[in-house]
Every structure is written in structure tokens, then in C-alpha cells.
Length: 468
Image 1 (cartoon, one colour):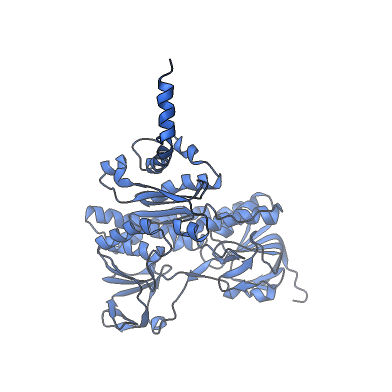
Image 2 (cartoon, rainbow, N blue to C red):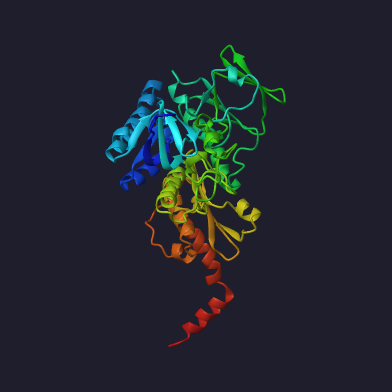
């Protein structure tokens, strides 16, 4: 390195996904000298291979199921490609360059605690944000690596619709893809080593499972695969129980793993775990105070990673407050929402009832089915419910919704948990009629009705009625 003077920045961000872009936007807007390093496509996996194309695909599939008309695969590809192209300018090199950031296309690796190399050039900074995201986890099943399998990153490049899609993994990605491709006329089998929906509330997951099975999706729980091998029409899986499962295509969807192998983090003295960069609850590396981690690659000590795009964006904000403003910001997942975008959608924020029981915080649950909601009845879509979880003092600590538009409705309960609103504040809301959003209010109303119509209020009202 003798004689080579590195370029200096206030902040270097590695990775142009949701977390990295949030951090760059904040720092550049504050007038700092910022470098953004990205080895692939701007926008990360969410824009290019994740949230955006998958939600476009689901929309196309749901419309196809309703109309009975399945478009050609090329038309479907044009649909999600259009969605990516329309959103891409928001995440583009041109946009971030216009904000004053230096955007470099290339692969970064650390050469020391405060220095990286990109494209043969040395860069140094006072602070670093590592936001390189994650990649699909590949199972250690004999034969899988020798097959032309698909992942959530590569399925978009298929040349045709599968005849029979085998999906390894019954989590949100696997179930969303099962819903989408079954709606496009594809035979689908989902194979899960444990129980599908194990982390979800059983009452909320039941309608999702029923809808998938009604759509013809074969769901195989507690099925462990021992061997994968080529078959004349595609791929063949052999279970540990000796069962043979055959399909034309195999999608591996067993989760994602933090992507940091190329960064040479030991050279920077950055401690890692299998889940990512070990940080404190303010997302600062516990072993190198110059380095922060955000998004899928962050493994906050005592909490663990959360692989959601909205969490990545949230992390970007925490890094700005902590690294630049030196404020004592730290992550708080008490009101963290998540949505599985099947039909019906399943949305959850805060604790499930089972999680509350395990934490010793469960008081009771309030439930209102959409079968008793006028909008759902009017549209003949009554499957689903709203379930609110209260602690022993009657405070809202969790909410779950399963039904059409569940993801759009869950935000109210996230706000209520975050702001520590009393149930009475939600009960007092004037909500438009008829909407599904009334279901939660009705559940709370039923809770208060137990108190309002108890013997002593009835006696009080009778007494007051006698007054002149």
C-alpha cells in the first residue's frame, strides 16, 4: 500500500438494498461525504428478486384465478418486469448521485479496521455501514447441488411455467409461491420438515392452509428429504420415510442466510456469527466501533436477525441516529409487523398468544370473525378473523389478522402497541362502514360489553333511571 493514498469519506455504505439506501439517503441529505458500494443491482433483492416481483406475480395469479384465464408466461414476466422498471428510478445510481453520494459498482472487502478495497482502489471512512443482505439458504440434502434447482432469486428467469412445482420449505416465501403458481394452473407440492405455520397463531394460519388446499396445493408437513435426483420429467425427491415425490421443477425456499463471505470481515476485526455481524442493540459492531450492520446481515446480540425489507429500512434510520447524531438509538421490535401475502393474507404485529404465554405476559385474547363483519358478508368473503392479544393488565401486546387486505389493516395495531394506546382509544375510533377494519373494534367492544353489562352497572343505570 506504500505510496497509495486512499480516498476518504465520512461514511461508506456497502450494499444498495433497503438498509443501505436508507443510510445513504440520510447521510447524503445531511451534507456528509458518502460512498455507496454495490456489486450487483441497485435496490437489492427486494426490488429485483423479492418483494416487488413476487407481489406482482401474486396479483397476476389472483386475477387469473378469478377470471379463469391464465396468461402466457412471457406476459406474466412482462408484468413483474414492468413493476421493477417503474420502481427502479427511486433506487437508481442517478438518484443517489444527485443527492451527492459517490456510487461505486464493485465488490468491497476490508483491508483493515477503517479501510476497504474496491476495484483495486483503497477507501477509508470514519464510519462504515455493512448492508449486504442475504442469499437463499441451500439445504444439505444429497443431490440437491447437482440439480438445476430454483430459488426465490432465480425463479424469475424461468423460460416457462412449470408443470409441477415442488417447493422445499413451507415458510412465507414457499407458501406465497405456492399460492401464486397454483393460481397460474401449476400443480404445486410444498414439503416442510416441520409443521407449516408453526410460528404463526394456529387460528390465523388455519384459513391460509384451508385456502391453499382448496386451490389444489399439496401440503406435506413433517416430511424430511433424504435424496434429490434427476427424473426423466424433472426432479425426484426421496423422503426419509421412503416416499417418492416427483415434479418438473424444484424451488428451494428454506430461508435466507447473511451474505458476508466476500467482505473479509476478520481483517477489520468484525465479529460474526452464523446469522451475520454481531452488533449491540444500536446495530454497532461489538468488536469494531467504526462498523455498523443493517438489514438481513445484522445479528443484534440477544435479539437475533429479522429478514424483512421494512426492518432493513428501519435499521437505516437507527444507524443515522446512532452513528451520525450520536443519539442512544436502539432497535425495538415490540411493534414489528409481518405479512404473508397469500390469499387470504396473514398479518401479525407484536406477540402471538403463544409467544405471550411463553414470555409470561398473556392475559387474554379478543377475537372477531369476518363471518360477523358486514363488509365481508356483503362480498361473500367471510373466511378469516381479527385476534388481539392482551397482557394481564389489559394492554394490547399483539394483533393478528387473516383475511383480504390483512396487511393493510395491521398498521393500526402496530401504532397502538408502539404508542401504548389504551383499548378505549381504539374503541372510540369512528371507522368507515362497511369495512373489515371494524372487526377489531367490534372485538374490543365485546370486551367492554362484558364490563358494561355486568350486574353493578345494570343496577346503577336502573337507579339513575328513577331520578327526575
